Length: 318
Image 1: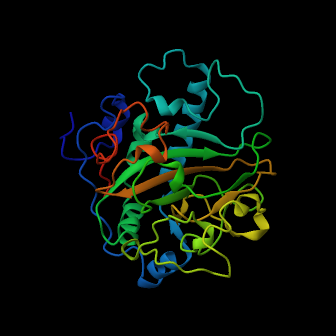
Image 2: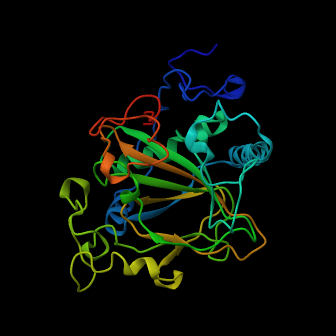
């Protein structure tokens, strides 16, 4: 058995079972982080625009390993009879045996795949990713809020309208940062990310009580005239041409703030568009029940309001 103080990898990781009660075998020590994956200019750009197009964080072998593993998981879900050893949130948002569908899905999701297969458990601690996120969070220790696969299979997807993420989450302050890692080349034609630069700090895009605080690098910066909250609903009706596309090659990633508005258009090609989404929160984040009382990642944990988001379900990553 591997030592509990190091991360599982290789054959030992692939042989390890995943259990809902203990999703992370042992307590993995985060890998050594790159000293400075981001330049000061890149950090300033992220805080200004609410997103940052990064570079490749996976080599060809690592990329192919994740794609092959995902293909296997998709097949297994279509034939799996026993789901008792899977985390409840993993059932959300994709086709599985016995599931009924009345319409085309906008996206296909596999939530907290890191709890299910070791290959994705390793991916939540990619050194370049967690090193960059730590810098963007002011070098604070970080935990995983959750991961998810989001795919837009050809002919089985739709536009996913503009939204920001924070107000769907039962978390206390808007300090989360998402890594959007392309598993296939992502283009405007097959549904790459589109963002509204600066919307994370523009009070017009946020509800009036939004916490745009200096300690979160969120001092208000309106980009035009209008009252706070005046675009909060309207932006959800915008088309992709109102935003900036962020095309990525497979293996590259981008980061975006949890208050940044983003969307993905329909995949109109005959090519897949799969992405691994890694959502990080600073250590010390607390549970806010009223914000999202039925969130699939927390509803079965029965957390008390104000509880720290900690433990093996929200592992330290860097």
